Length: 133
Image (tube, rainbow, N blue to C red; front, side, top):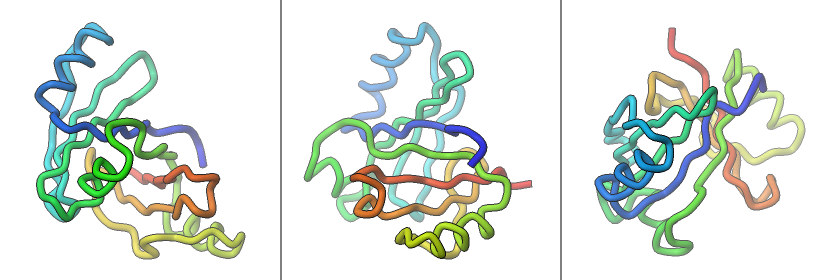
């Protein structure tokens, strides 16, 4: 894992939250995108070298909708940048981590992604991200 790629925050409304984070950071999101396969709309903000992803559910069955129902708005995941996501998944499986999707899938912001179950990571959902080349 090379660095923290971004912090994901689940929100009820991108429209409202975008305004809040624009005021907080002093600039608008640099990118907004929908990931239909995950039932989510996203906004990305840069704050210095750090990236924040806001996530809004697009349907009641999406993982974000379920998270919001259980926990409300807040930090959803921490994403780490990796060079080789397939090798990293295999390494982490050998270390005993539970990988939620063993085959990387296309995520937002031109990334391949995979997730580690929070039961094995002190309650934190971990996302692995690799830039799609």
